[in-house]
Length: 146
Image (tube, rainbow, N blue to C red; front, top):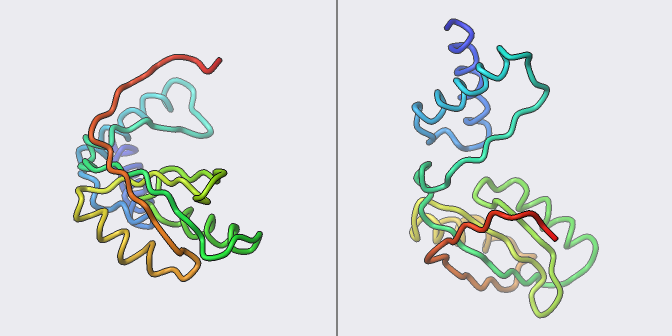
């Protein structure tokens, strides 16, 4: 049980550095218990956890179509670096057409997304336009790619 305490402190430190310190301690303990069980069966080099966003209090998913002010290699790299540092962005894809990027953002609620949009994303001069599409329902499709 003492090792769980050390894991918990380490995990909370990682969450704090990643701006995820709002996660509930019970969620952290659940993840740590799972890691400890795996470690006791022989260890692991790397672990990944598939978390339910709504279970973490992230009840708002948004797909944002992002248009850059100008499209060049430097601007694309700068945008990709920018969103890779934003914990709210869970995926980023460069696409063809009138928009340049499709990003998926998770937030606590619509006000949380609005805060992200105004205070983080739109303050960047390399973005000329963002069109937001809020997810109203999710259907799980669990099948292999063909």
